Length: 159
Image (tube, rainbow, N blue to C red):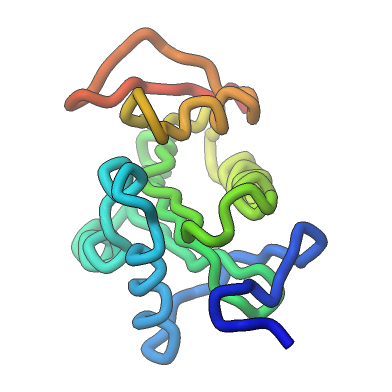
């Protein structure tokens, strides 16, 4: 039997993106507490992201699940009128790092964006340095645009 610290999921688990409900919001918010101090500096807490999403008409957000275990959070800024798509937030809980869940979720997100009106690229940004997800995004095919926004490097994935 696994202890509470050991995940009940593994690299072969099915990853899905699910709507956050009143029943699941607290566990999704609590995932932020599992990040290392370094990673906490890289991404806003899920509670803040969910609150921001409710006040931004272009926000699309989901919980990331591996089988039936919540493992992360993702939020896009989708401005279909301007055909602009931006990966606003992406986090995988600390104990689930290195299990492939982030990549599986990102592949689904990329497919979603490809299906949106006029989608030609997906943009994101990240803070450089220790703990940065830059390498993760580059391995998915994003490229550094050479531009910066509020101390974060802008990355682009051509669709």
